[in-house]
Length: 94
Image (cartoon, rainbow, N blue to C red; front, side, top):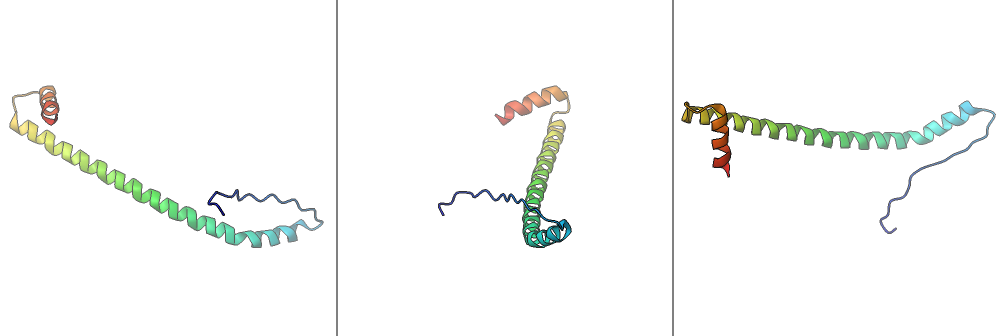
């Protein structure tokens, strides 16, 4: 193969007098495929959850850093109002 993706669709038309038996047999044939898909999606879900938790932790750390910086600015310049401290902090960061 050349590495291209194959469309994995299956179209099936069955004409039968006993649909219960055919559907039971078909369900048995498809069970391994369903199990494989379930495992794959669970693994992808775990990866998504880990990335989400990592992003949350990063945001928490940034917020804590902001709080520490804000407290430091207040303690260093108690006579400045909040807007002035923000302007000062912005110009200091650049």
